[in-house]
Every structure is written in structure tokens, then in C-alpha cells.
Length: 457
Image (tube, rainbow, N blue to C red; front, side):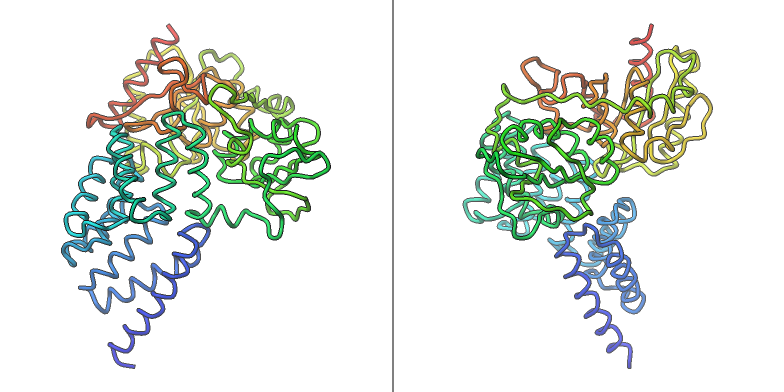
């Protein structure tokens, strides 16, 4: 086989792998992504000027959440292929994912200058505009997009977030149903041949509630007891890390099982569809305070003996972290700098990050946070939790703990204000802190130290 035949065979393989990844939308396909990266790198070795393959490779690294490497490769692709709209759109998606919404907006506008009708660029632009708090402009863009492409699931999904950010639950949750078409990970959690529940009374039926992301399970668990009032039994399917905690906090008539186990029932529903079928409004939204298992609390009490003003922090565990553009070394350096400037503080700092922190003046809790029931036990002993928007922040919020959630720019619909400004509708115990204005991570952490110091004077 000569070089051209070899490249042609590799390109065919890459096309097949790319189709498989597209079908899964990059989710739960780690093995396929690894093969695709290897194949793309082999092509580039033989054909180093192939901008399209560089673009694919950069996108694969994005799906693997290696954002810094993805950016470098996509930038290389753009230098090779000039104004390639697909690559520009991929860079825009990357910038949105790490919270750089200004750059994402510029990239999307550039793509639209080249191809004015590009629907992906319009959707990316609307997303960045929404997060930059230009909600009217984002709404206009989505409406224009839907007028020519009425079945675009991502456009509907973006519109759902806009409506929910405006506390328009009726329109927002109706539009949110489009997520089922947008994300194959949701469809994979559905059950075959079981009809969907529409909210009617079904006192002789068993309802199966299907899982979505872990943060969604935590935020929407409040609706499960309400659904249970309308049916005979409820089976709540959830991720294995959440089974024990959810079982501890569900009322009689609700069984909690690992989503990987077989299940039999009469009706089914996705957990984020519950507020729609229950006709929930901002004024009728139920509350549910998650409580940890007392035995788990007893196991960890020794970590907190004699300590006062206990502060937990977590900046990992999320795709949309405010630190997404910072690598591990930069994060550690930022924390070290912040801690040196906080020698005389009157509080104890606990790390709830997934990675271990062996640093002076920090109590590492990473070994206690791999299951949510264990994480709840240590959070119960803390006085304040400071976290990016991730599973830890949502867990602390549903436990009714004082929680500071760190975001970039606009916080999103999950933290929309309730009746009182600055008090989130979904989580009244949460305070949203926004990092922006070109401030470095070190400077922002120092600001947080000062805020904490004032709280515990």
C-alpha cells in the first residue's frame, strides 16, 4: 500500500469513528474517542498540512475535556484552513464551555460573516449572548433561527434556558423537552416500550423516574414526592453514587435503584420533565432538604473535632467550571498564593475537590466525596461551602447549607433570583459570586478569603 492509499484508508476509518462519536454526541464513548485521536494523529504525521483533520482532532480533545490542548490544535487547524466555519464554530463552543463568552461571541460573529445562514454559529452566538446577559439579543437570534429551522433541538434548548432565566416555567419547561432530541445521553436513559406519564392520576400504576445528570438529580429530586402522590408506587432510577443518599431522603412508596439495574413499571418520565407535567410555577415549587445518614456523619466527626468556622471549597468536578481555562499547576499556585496571604484567618479550610490537596492549612476530604452520601456527611459538618457550579455546590444547596457558588458572568437559570434580589429561586441559601473583569484566579481567591474573613470576624 503506498502513502496515498494508507492515508485514504485512515481517513475512511476516521470518518467511521467520527460518525459513531456524532451519534453519541461525544458522551460515553471514551474508547471511540481514543481511537479517533490516534487515527487523526496518524493522518497528520503523513499529511501535516491537513487542516480538516487538525480540526477533527481538536474537537476530539474538546469532547475529552482537554480544553487547553483542544484550543491549541483548533487554532492550528484555523491557521491551515483559513476561514473554515466548522473550525470557527468549534472554537466558539470551546470558548463557551470554559466561560470565555466574549471570545465565543466574536468567533460566532466571524462565522456568520463568512456564512450568514449557519445555524450552529447562530446558536453559539445566542448562548454566549445569553451568558453575557444580553437576553433580548439572544432571544431575537433564537427566534430568527427557529423561523427558518423550526426543529433545531439546540435552538429550542437555548430558548428553554432563556425562558427559565425569566422564570417563565410554562414556556421554559415545554422548550426543555427538546433536550431529549438534543442529547443522546438522555435518550439512553429511557426505557423501551413503556409509555410516558403526562401527569394524570394513576393510583394503580408504578411510575419509573429516569435519571439525567447528577446535578439534575439533586436539583429536581424535590419533585419526586409530588409525583408519588399521583401514582401507586415510584421507582427512582439514579446513578450509583447517588443511590444511598436518595434512598435516605425519599418518602414511603418511593424505591431508589441503581440506573444500571433492570426495572419493571407501567409508566416512565425523565426527572427534569416532572415540573412540566406537575404544572409547577415559581410560586408552587416544592422544597426538599436532603439530610445525610447519621452513621456516615459519625464516621467523619473526628475530622472536625475542635475546629470552628469550617469552610469547604471545591473548584473541580465540573465541565463548566470557572477554572476550566486553568490547568492543575495554575490552580495549585493560585491556592498557595491565596493561602500565604491569609495566614491570620480565623477559619479552617477543607478541600472537597476530587483531586487530593496535600497543602499546609488545608484538610483534604477528597477520599470522602466519591459517593454523595459520604460527601453529604462531611458537608453537614461545615459552616460554609464555596464551590464552582458542580455536584458539590448542588448537594450543599439542597442540604440547605450556606453556599457560595462561583460562576463567570451570568450565572444561568439555575440561580435566577426569586422574589428577593440576590436570593436564588431554586436555592435560597446560595450566594452567587461572579469572576470577571479580567481578574486572575489568584486575585479572585484572595477576594474570597477577604469575604470569608469578614464573615467569621
